Length: 333
Picture: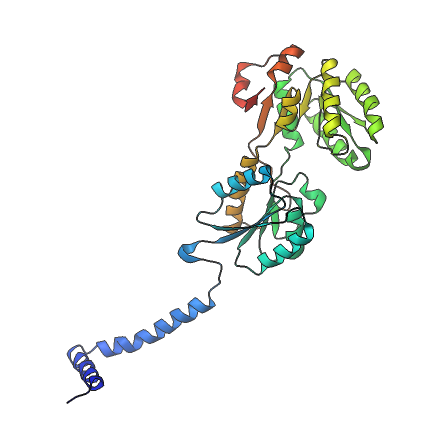
């Protein structure tokens, strides 16, 4: 009585005799299977199931503005990506540890949200692309590594001046406050951009808190509008109310850089929407993963501006805007 194994061998001989090419095809299939197995071991572990990629989000702090930007990023970022989020909780040292953990992961790209996250990523991650966002002045923090790029949170000066000219076509003289120790280079650039926009821009230095009242009085007596530029040494929760109230008392319009300034009484503000920052950063990340090189060392400006107008302030100042400008305005107060 033949054994089961013997029966199996007989079946194979029968198959080979009946189909002469079968044995040759079976033998030749083994090298292909072996090659496929080796490829699966040696291929880069960057791709997950179904071709998804892993993107690490290094977040400086769990605040609403950052979460809004992250939501925008996910809406336009690489399709089907697997997102893993790491939160620094405002701690740079923790950020470095998390960055080292990301470096050892399968992430193909790191999104750094906020200054501390970007600094931690720059220090610890050198072989994976890093895209940053929600940073007011990236160049000030030297975020110019070869594997880094990102978007600007601030609207470029020339675009601001062009928009100011659109809403205030009769404006000729405009003043701004600045801290001379750190703000002089920026002030010079603003003056240069002002000349290009046919606006005489004059800077009034504020070296300390006690200098603000006199500098502001001088500015309001000698200019037609006040342009607020980001400067944490001058603009505080207390000073902004004083600045806005003083300007309105002199019937001087104020141009800000945040919808909050408009809500508090500024005539208009030019800013960027946090969700839009995330959306445009997501598109930038797509280009990076598509192999765009070299990466831009300078931050990429956000294309879409957010314009807010305080209509009560406009009426108080006796100003009106042409109807065609309504399409440019995102919010009114």
